[in-house]
Image 1 (tube, rainbow, N blue to C red):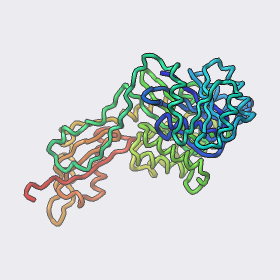
Image 2 (cartoon, rainbow, N blue to C red; image 1 turned 120 degrees about the horizontal axis):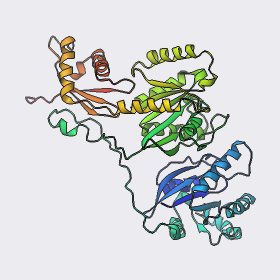
Image 3 (cartoon, rainbow, N blue to C red; image 1 turned 90 degrees about the horizontal axis):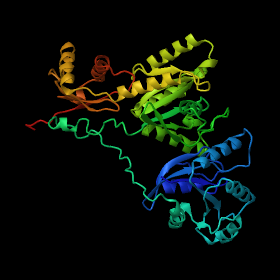
Image 4 (spheres, rainbow, N blue to C red; image 1 turned 90 degrees about the vertical axis):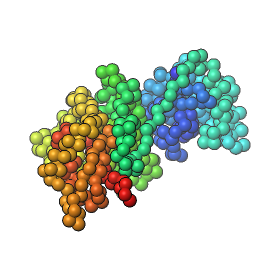
Length: 468
């Protein structure tokens, strides 16, 4: 598949063009220069032709260890992967000295370069189009990414580089549907597990989340064993959620590095608001979420709020207690973590955690083993027959409370979904079943069927009355 890198100085509209080609709002777009800092890739579709598109940080004239210098290194890494380069300039501003500098830089890449003059939706850009010829890349492609103008010209410019026998790939169709129509037990067996199979050919999606500056990007780099995303001592380096494909022991993974999550009351900057939304979206789409903690400030209030959000979304949660090499009173910290998990996250028993040092690459494999173990439990299914034999024993030990002097009969239970394990229980009067009894059933399911550390949902339903 053709790989196309989109490059240019800051704020010329690279991320807008990337989003349009991807057909999704993947990259954060704002008028502030330098929003994009890491390169990211996605599958694009241009008039039926599939390709891989790469969004890059704005090219900066910096060669040191500053943020701008690290951004430039990330862009260079992206250019090394590309087959074709789309060099984007701003038609309204015309050719700037920075454009001329980076045009000279791109000529050294020895790759096909297509000059794209963006923001050409009005006559204000005519002078910029004329100036662009001086850059020496031939006739420019004139577009307005924000208004979807000129994409046919991009297609024509890329046509000579498309592979001749490009195979079309089917996109993922996320199975949707909740459980609003489960009133009737009859026909239930056909419904159970029709949507929730673990496909070994599809990558397992892992989101790495946490507060700012706890080492999320460093952890991703340690997992893939390369400097894939930008890191540094500054808080808030990561802005976009960056997805990285990776393979481990023959299984494909998609690792997603996210922006640090602060308390909502402290988020006032528009870019940080978009970064936060991007991080929450990554959690929602993930299967496993690794919550990174600072070992010196483990499980602060914000950490627990993030953990509760992950559980609410039904994701498989694992904790990575990072910077463990700098922790002094380790036994006290471990006791504190276990206490907070048992008291503040009692609704999800025994969440797995590992102490690591992402910077030194310590215990990364142990963390990954616990993540896969949690993922296996998250996908667990239990036979309907075994569940109902178990339910009869539970009810005989502790019957449901009476309702107006009559038995509130529990008739049937079935697992209707995995990921997370979700059960439906048919009761004579579900609205009258107290929460304490539901907890009794949930705790029994966790204990007797080995379902710790993941969210577990129990839905109560009433069977249809044939005489009503």
